[in-house]
Image (cartoon, rainbow, N blue to C red; front, side, top):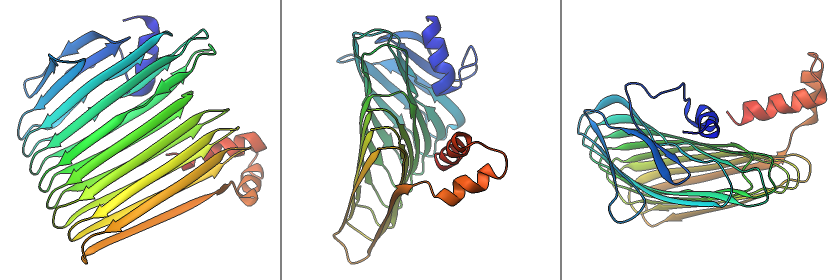
Length: 306
């Protein structure tokens, strides 16, 4: 690995020189820079396209698999397909951060297409951090796609964060829930300057007593533009909650487009949205504690995005 990759790994996947004791695959500029399977987690290269098949054995507990991807220079257009097969009763954590770096006028891209297949009673905590770095004028682009098939009484928790520096992102997430299946999503996005971020979620709640809780929190600074779109379909007795909260700073713009579609009399669906600027009394209160206006604003934004 080169030094840029190591610096990006520290930010997006808590890299400390190794992933000791864990299964992992490190992707650098479209190639594998390191891989290790464990006794219970097998990582294999796909035979028909770039990407991985990750197999987690049934009843695997308290293990972590790392699959970060880094683009360290311009003129890289990386596309990867990763499939996760989670065995019955397994309970694991997956860390899939991505960093894109460029120092000249050419674009650098990484697009990851991830599919999850959760068997009965399995649980997955999926963490994903995105960042763009470098002083070049080329665009830093990260556009992930996530498809999830959440089995009977399975639980998928997704915590996704766009830390900053990404010029364009189009994040798409689709999911289908079986009986008792649960999907929890917490999205955090920061955009600045002229950056653009689009996120869309489409969830079909097909199973009896399944549910989704989707929370998106974002901050749009400078002249950046964000758009949030969610579709929750209640096709059975289920619960669905979608929440979009955004803070505008400078000339930032945010659009929220929620859709709730109830196709069962027993579907309980709700959406909440709030978009606005930081309240002046919040700034004033922190200034009385000795913070400058800029420090107060940064503190409020940091707390909001946690």
